[in-house]
Amino acid sequence: MSILFILIGLTLLVVGGEFLVRSSVALSFKLKLSKMVIGLTVVSFATSAPELLVSLQAALNGFSDISLGNVIGSNIANIGLVLGITAIITPLAVDKDFYKFNWPVMMLFSIALYFLLGSGDVLSRVEGIILVVLLALYLFFLIRRGRRAHIEVKGIDDALEKISNFKIIVWLVIGGVALWGGAELLVTGAVDVAGMLGVSERVISVTVIAIGTSVPELAASVMAALKKEKALSLGNLIGSNIFNIASVLGITAIIQPINLVNDALLNFDIFWMLGIAFILIPLAFLPKRFQFSRYKGIILFVGYVVYIGMAFLE
Image 1 (cartoon, helix red, strand yellow):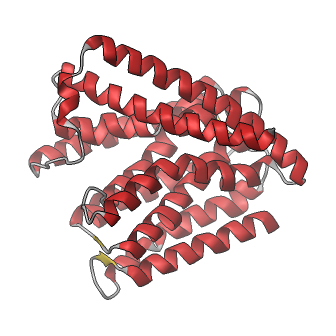
Image 2 (image 1 turned 60 degrees about the vertical axis):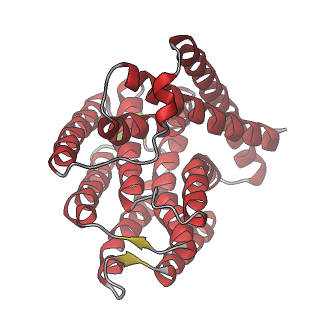
């Protein structure tokens, strides 16, 4: 039954996330927001909704390890699993924004999370507010840079501009209910499975839950790669990692402070998150320069498999 809860929960998160993204984009068109702003902010917030609901539900139920493990594991999966597999299918170009802006900001947030957790074994409400304020500053500079560079955001369905208000409300309700139900079932099932397997909630959260909440990004990235589309950029994945730390953990901590229960999250998992993020820079400048080719994708994917194996042994 617990496995069924997890599967149904993941399915509801995928469905709810899709409805929320579509309704959010349609609503943004109604509010006369530009496609660039929608792509850089609204979509990013909406695609982080599954992680937010899972982390919030876990924190409220007293499973802080799942809140932290979900985000840390998802950030590792976004690079090792999603970027790794996508690069194996088709090489990805590295633009200047990656190493001049997006990557440094991601590393800044990642290092900040390490020190915030290490300073008192808890992510407090004040620290949650700090993360959200830093996210607002990041979005401000992101939009300003986008306007200066006249960025054209692709992958947004123009048909959503003509959706009726009634349909937007229905989609928002479906998305919200599905995300809430999916988070509830996933957390309940994960805790039960951890008990049956004799492993900690932290192990289940950085593996099963993290992979599950990264499935939408993986599916979208693989489909784009197979179709030879350039819809997926490195910036999308880096942005997702920033939002996971700043919005998911920030908002969760404001509502319910997150305690560090399992030291392995701080002494093991977060170092993997920092390491797999850091290695992107030398990989970007190795031959072929400014391109994540297949062998680089293999390096990332193998690294992720090694991490999953070690997580169960830790």
